[in-house]
Length: 115
Image 1 (cartoon, one colour):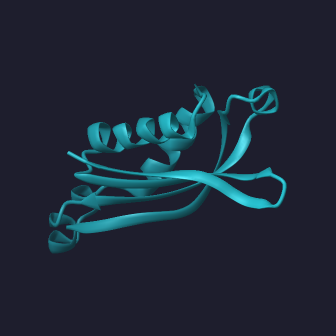
Image 2 (cartoon, helix red, strand yellow):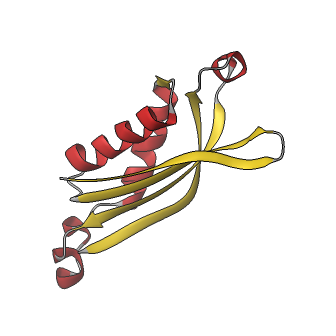
C-alpha cells in the first residue's frame, strides 16, 4: 500500500470543554497519513489517487462549520471522511492543541483506523 501524508496542517476549529475554548476557535495542528490505491503510482494518473488538496480543503471547511467537545471526536470525524468519502483503506491522524497549558507546547491525540 502507498501512503500520502500531510504534516502539521494548521486549522481553526471550535473544540474543547472549557469556557475559553468555547468562546472562540483555536488553532489546531493536524498530521494525517492515509493509504491510497497502488494504481496511482502504476498508472501515473491523478484520477487514481486521493488528492491531498481536496482533502485539505474538505477538512478545513468541515472544521469551520462544526463544533466538538473532544479532540477524539474530531479525529474520528476526520477519519470517517477519509474512509467513507475519500475511500482511503487506512488512516492515521494526529491532532494537537497548541500552547493550551503553561509550559506545554502541544497536547493531543493520535488515532489509527482501517476499513
